[in-house]
Image 1 (cartoon, rainbow, N blue to C red):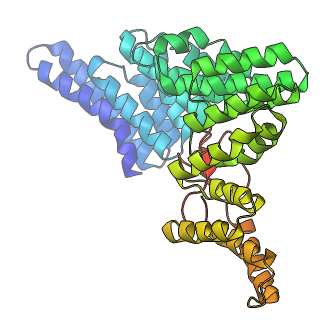
Image 2 (cartoon, protein in one colour):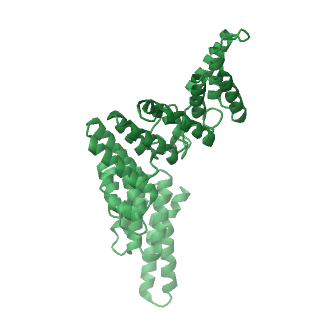
Image 3 (cartoon, rainbow, N blue to C red):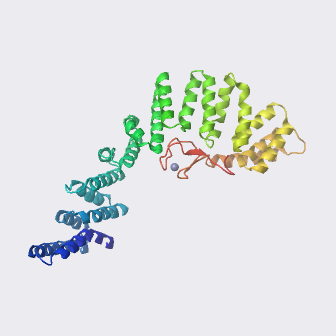
Length: 389
Ligand SMILES: [Zn+2]
């Protein structure tokens, strides 16, 4: 209720302005009287808890002057913060209609109105507002960002791509990153329709926009793999390690399957050893231990994992260690109790999140390219620390 006295700010400012000028001219006295009546009427509506009537009345009777514009914006923001979107909308719409507003203020009003529509889920109307601002030096990047969010919500990837020239011109890395993911989405559609050339073109375009897009390389690797171009697929997988070391553990198994069919089969384990040395990733460690086991150097692999777990203890590493113990034919160990421990650890890991969003902290047991919480792209990566990598 008291916050609504904000409504009267424009009146108060206008009132002061008139007061400063009314000392000499009688007509100003009349204006003052008129404003005082408006002020009193508005206040009466507020005090009798008729807030909507008060807003309508004040907006109808109060002129937007240079020095009252900010007060109008403050009033609308207050409504929005209180979750009263319809009232915020009313004030912003009123501001947008004012012919006397300067360009900058008009753009501000259009932008805020777009935000109101967006918050209310009225995407088509929000889109209309933001499209008016795409070339604005002040609101251009913000408007483009909202437009991409709208197109992401309605999965209209092509509409986002239609903004490409403006996005490139803005030189905004975040916008390019989002657009690269729009291209990946279109590539997925092309894959479903079995359009090989189009798939590769779309993915190459995604990489041009965002050379750090590990998603584009991963999808490209899968496209090459499905067309039996295994060497090219291996190259893409390797590039993912250069692009995003935190995401890389998730592609190790896929990469191995591809290396097994390529001309460079022998290069896989040395590469994984390099990954482990550089990152300490548990997935890379487990994969390298496989190699040591295959090479029949069990003692060496046991020494290796013990040293690794001392250096960087993880539950997944511990689970693998128990598995190794179970596989040994030692009389000193008790396979039954180890089996129970292994199952317990496996059950524990199963319910723990495998991925966390690096942007907002959202946790998940399954992977999403767009975070379900903050909607940012390519931010869900394997969890770090004791329960992760
Ligand atoms: Zn997130």
